[in-house]
Image 1 (cartoon, helix red, strand yellow):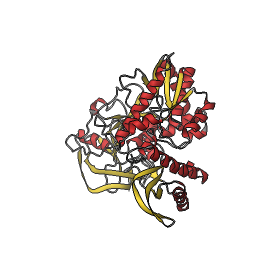
Image 2 (cartoon, helix red, strand yellow):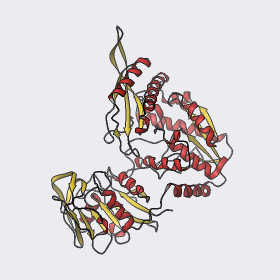
Image 3 (tube, helix red, strand yellow):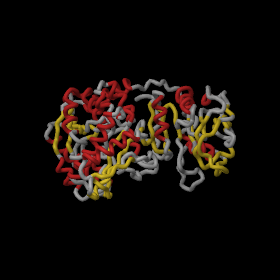
Image 4 (cartoon, helix red, strand yellow):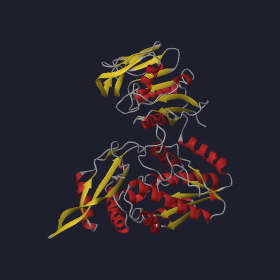
Length: 509
């Protein structure tokens, strides 16, 4: 196991960004809910306490036994984490007299402390809190201030415990990465040796040990996650792996044939299964997004179970689960208040006598791509935009029919091919089209029409946890709208989605 930083999550929208910034330092880290702290072992070199939408003064606010951690490992409390440290040990945390949200400057920095070394006076930091620390407990020392926040950062004397009132993980904190490097490298002593090559070697050895001589069946999607996961498993166990690529009737236009072709040169044993009608039957009449996801997940499991029974000795199901899937399926308050279910997270039904192997479930999307390139997987797979597991079913709002799928496939094909033809595809993290459950009035020739509306979506992101809409050129969008309306029968209006995540999600369902 690699040395790591443990991040305890109190529910902040920025927690995943803290993890990304630590990973960028080539240091492994994991996020765990504050109420489910793992056993502290020699691999854990330090702890970061995240922010939270809660106030430490609220009844039932997230709490933690800090006595069991203080003095044993370096601790960095961020925003709520810093307020919790102050509050629990006799300090005073009160509502801010003015709203402290947005950019601020560190007017005072005590550069004698390792946490702040090489930072500059006036450094811009990002504040996002409704409370402020008015009084520190005995033995806590202020080490940074702004014009309106006296306790912008503190250190507990005699131990490597720090608190900061700002968010170093967001890009608005101009020297935030430097502060995190100071904590992770200088204070915690991490070696910064967690790289793609180290991950690959360790994962392959782990897979060999875990799987042994057993056989694995794995579903492929043609995307980067499942392709990288399958390649890692294949490197570990070779022909013991059988891959299954299912045509669920919800793929992009011509995708089934193209994906099978792309795997031919990768040495993977891939079986193509046409299950379109089976999925359409399961989706008939369903309009609720969660119901559609669950139906698709159930049928995927059934298809894999059928295929697994055709192979003697299969004991494992390989999956391309990545870390954001896991994070979004876990809540800091116990059972998840579901944003969306993931059919590849959460185990298998009892009737399926397979264990799950998920070699990528600690990686973010960009890290998966780095591993894929280190494995020399073709760039056309590595650079492919993410595509949701439920496919076009969650881009068709309302019920699913073969006719609607065909319409959306044509729209999506024009849009994606247009991005490629105009050199825009690689500037976009994810793109697609959404078929809306409304019709609008239009005019074609001398006739009045009443036809479907489609929305185009293109976002930029690093790992999918946050995303901004892409400012595609007006001329390009105009060309796409014209081509879609002229070439796709039944569509007479095209709109462009300019929502970011948060508050919107990347997908509409």
